[in-house]
Image (cartoon, rainbow, N blue to C red):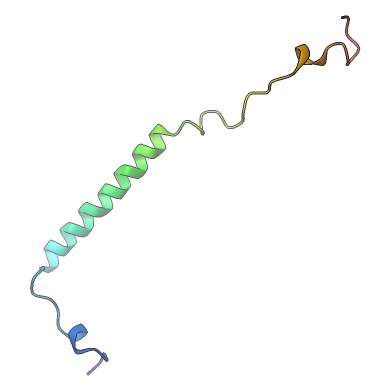
Length: 67
């Protein structure tokens, strides 16, 4: 007996090999589709940094400009 559990030795007859492969492929394609949808819809990658907001007209007077 190679395994300690006898239920592991038997292969379940309820799901066939190709049916299990079809379920696995379908579920993985669902995850890939969801990932591609998230990648396509991601807004943060289009603006990698926040826009800078300078107070008081970019501190013109403090940097030596005319008031």
